[in-house]
Length: 201
Image 1 (tube, one colour):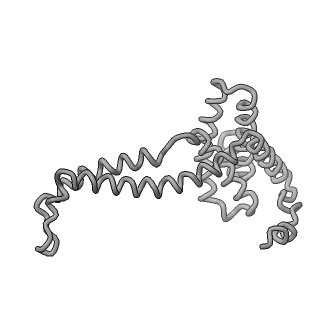
Image 2 (cartoon, rainbow, N blue to C red; image 1 turned 60 degrees about the horizontal axis):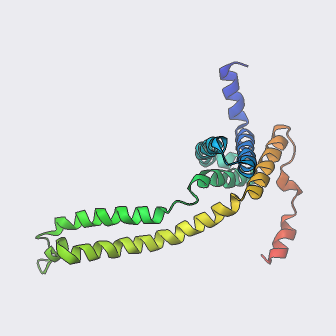
Image 3 (cartoon, one colour; image 1 turned 60 degrees about the vertical axis):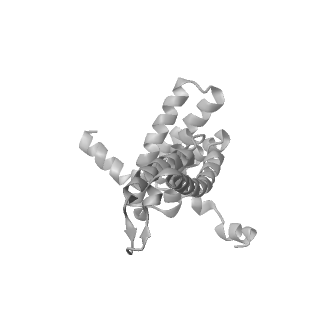
């Protein structure tokens, strides 16, 4: 198969190809994590992160052309692969600290600035008011980001429990195989009406 033919084949089988590769990566990461968190695990995690970003890009561009179950499966798998390397990184603190520095520097430009020729903002450009205002803004941003980060990490950690990640990978590969062979989607075997009834929806 020539390169042009291979590219055309991948483009015509994009969702199942993405699901197959993403599923294999998810399974490999889960198995390696359960077996031994060595250099191969780190390489697989990095590969999963990079491929996860690619999954997101392709999903955003083509999701309307795919069946809903495949699109959701791609999105969930991509999220799990992307979040995995950063589950224990405190982005809120880093972002808040960065913003505090930016605010502190920016407040220096208020020296001599007047609002409606009545309120002089110079006091905010120096001393304790400048420091306190920077801290307050940083604390507000930290609080908001911490809440959002906690939600992301909660779902990320649940999806990245190795048994869950392994199951997710198996489902991806199974869905991809069914799509390659032109069979029904796994979702066709699910009774969504019964599920909604049980959940009271």
